Image (cartoon, rainbow, N blue to C red; front, side):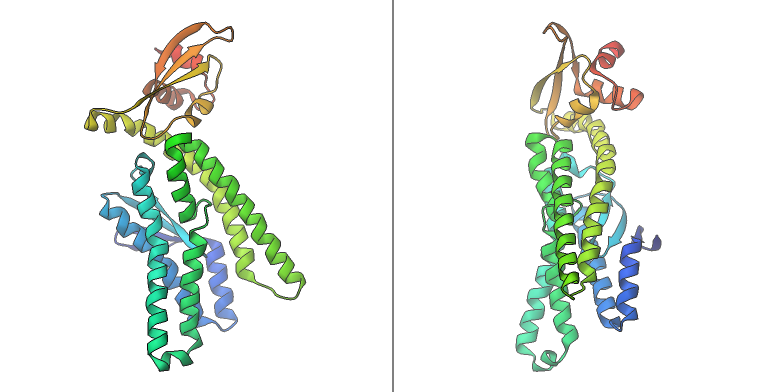
Length: 294
């Protein structure tokens, strides 16, 4: 749900976030509601500012209860270090606010009388630590994927982070149910488990299109740099291109040797030829289709 625009960037709210804000306000936590909203929004603004500092274009931002997803128009996956920098900026911002608030709390006696100020500190710590969990689409998951993508390929790194995210979602749900059965109802734990499972599942579809787009831009990156490591892969003629794409690393170029099941070499294809075939025939086309288009 689009709410407003900020600096030319559309800001959207996921319905779970709106529901959580409504429930907090309904039960008399208006100040806490405003703090949560402000911190989540500021968290994503920091991501956008760091992305723009790296010369990237930001599309839109969708806010969830424990953070958000800033959609970058440029391809972060071509530079894992940039993706890590953008991802870590949010938690570092929350930890900085929490540290400054603790210093103020310890040195200003009047602040020690306000429970809301303690909520501000706790909220920053929760946002910071939660977003560092190694699960997509959290910031920690993006850092993990960025580190793994260079060795195991972007798609495989994404799927591993998604599996971790689903596992963490079930753990949080189990904790929430356990506490509920012992008369300790924590709506934030239920919301967090739903958020992780839903957002991670959505990330799988988004990641595939983002990945294919990034491969299309890699040729431009090669022309600008003039050199790039070449990796040779071997694939059966009937291997789906989806499986071939899974083995592609972001800062390397790939040559695929196509063989029959009896080991006979049928031909070779470069990465850009695989990408072109994916565009025209889809990810379930085979390496034989790539050779036929040569």
